[in-house]
Amino acid sequence: MIKGSVWPLPIQPADQITVKIKVHTMIENGGEKETFELTTFGRYYVKNASGYLQYEESTEEGPMKTTMKLTEDGILLMRSGSVKMRMLLEEKKQHRGSYTTPFGELLMITDTKELQHRWNSENSIGTIEVLYDLLIQGSKAGTYKLQIVFEEEKR
Image (cartoon, rainbow, N blue to C red; front, side, top):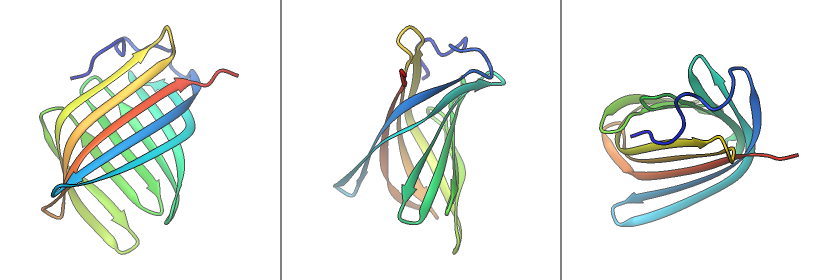
């Protein structure tokens, strides 16, 4: 469920704000846990009644651009660069997605258990929290807990 002062959207369309982004991902699979953390800078803006969070990161495969489209119903997560990924997350729903590498395309299914995203316009801080199961080519790749905090970078 999406909670907080996201709708109506907190900033005017076409206004872009520079944000500091902290991404924390925990993956649990068969009793094993892995944790990944990323701190980077990006931008948050509004277009056609949706919020967008964009950032870039360096990976072993090369640079990766991530765009998260935040809507009243859920989150569309898109990645482009050395690999392409498209994943829709909506609470209590399953969706097909894709992960394309130079070696071919893999079918993904997300089963979203929990989803929240909020924007506090007074403090210019946003949060995204998602818990989902990920299946790749029909096999469970793990349970993912994604937490993102983004806040306006004051200059």
